[in-house]
Structures are given as C-alpha cells and as structure tokens.
Image (cartoon, rainbow, N blue to C red; front, side, top):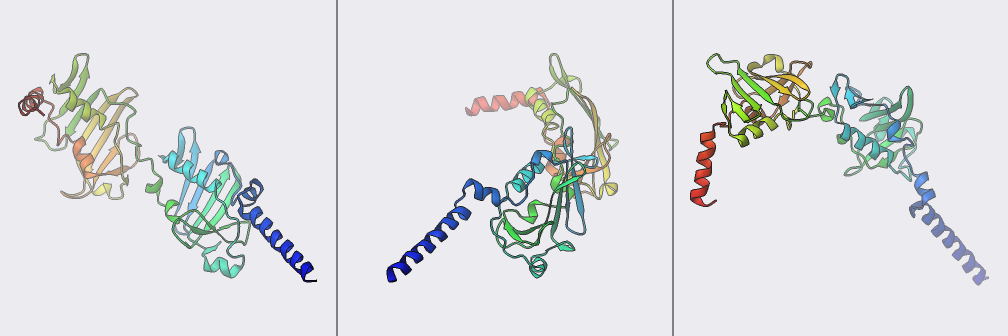
Length: 307
C-alpha cells in the first residue's frame, strides 16, 4: 500500500515538473502562448498614444513617420513597435475589475492608452498603468480583463511631441556650398562663406579650409531640442541663407532676452524650434576665425612647441 502511495506521489510530482517545463521552459509552444500582442510591426500604419489629457498620433509615411506636419524619429517609433511585438506575459497578475482599477488600466482610468492600427483596422490596443518595478508596467489588452506585468515603461511611451520629434529635421544632407549670415543689428556686416573651385572664400578672401569646412558641417549636424512655445516673444538675431545640393534654405535665429532660449526657424516650415545655446552661437560664427593668417599662426605655434 505504501509503495502504491509512493508511486502515485512520484507520478504527481513528475506531472508538475512536465507542466513547469512546458510553461516556463521557453519551448516554442510555450513562447507562442505567452505573446502579449499579436501584430506585425511592419503592418502598423499609425500609433496613437494618450494619457487621458494629451494625445500624440504617429503616422507612417513614404519618408518614415510623421506627427501631423512634423517628421517623427523613425528609429524610435520602430524600436517601440518591435519591443511591443516582442512582449511576453505568461501569467496574469490579476483578472478582476477591482484589480484593473487598482493597477490603473481601466478604459476610463489609465496612465497610457495605446492603439495600433493598420489602415482602418485596429491590430493592437492596450492600457498601461502602475509600475511594479524597474522597466516594468502593468498592462491590459482592451479585449481582456487580465492584467499582466510586461517589460515596458510609461516614460518610453510619452505623449509629448518633443519626445517623438525628429531632432534633425532642420539638418542638411550635405554641407552647403554658400552661407550668407545677415545680422539683425545694423552695425554688424553680413558674413558670406562660399566654396569655389579654388577652395573656401570668406567675404571674397581665401578662407582657412579647416575652419570653413567645420562651420559648414554644422548645418549637417544641426539638432533641435524641441518645438518653441515662446518664439513669438523672441527678438531676431540673424538670418542664414544656405545654398546646397538640394536647393536653398533660409534659417531665422532669434532669442528671448539676453539670457533666454535660442530659437531657429526654417522659413519654409511652420513653427520654430528650440536649440541649445552653444549650437545657436556656433551658427552665429561667435567661435570661428576664417582668416588664413590665423591658421598660419596656429601652425607656427605648433612647430615651435613641437606639438
């Protein structure tokens, strides 16, 4: 009798082990059962994110991703979609209406509401709420009462447009061949830097090639911080007219007061954008000397010191 009881206990233990291996062993079938959202990132044409007060809509376009008239950071959007498609949630942490309220994943009480669409079809919809730990968030699919802990954070799913904005939207694809910097102040003469067959020239004179190339490349690496809310209060500082391989571009640089934010505005695009102070000052030629004599002095100093 005791042997029979022992055998049955052993079989029960073996069954538990098999079940554990099936659900937690990472086998192919188990992985398929733990997929949280079943969609293909490539089929998603729009992504809507809301926190109940604010909302941002990201739409796929021929050039990548857009937010209305503004380009979005395509790599960031694609990374998020890939991460959401890879989410795994093998066991719910709760499945009641009370738990949905407690974890803030209700339809009328949430921290994030995310809707994924392929044209007019919703291919994924979820609510994100409280965080049980680092890089984890409670989540509920709109078609289910079950709440899961998944590997996301509300921080990386922002409703702010600046978080998704393509910060290089004003940057050129290659260095301009002509740069004309006209200052708003009457006593500041226009500065013209132009690339010719014989090299760079500054206001008609030969220019230090290194300094000129460095300055021109600033328009290739130009990054903004975000949209400018107070641009209307800013005073104009200068206008930069650029000629490049794709055509022409005019940038207006302004600032609020003597120590406020700097703004850059593309004359062909609605709205202005905040830029870091050092970026704006570099565009205003505050740190550059194009004279060939200055370059020669530097070379002479280096030869004497042996550096």
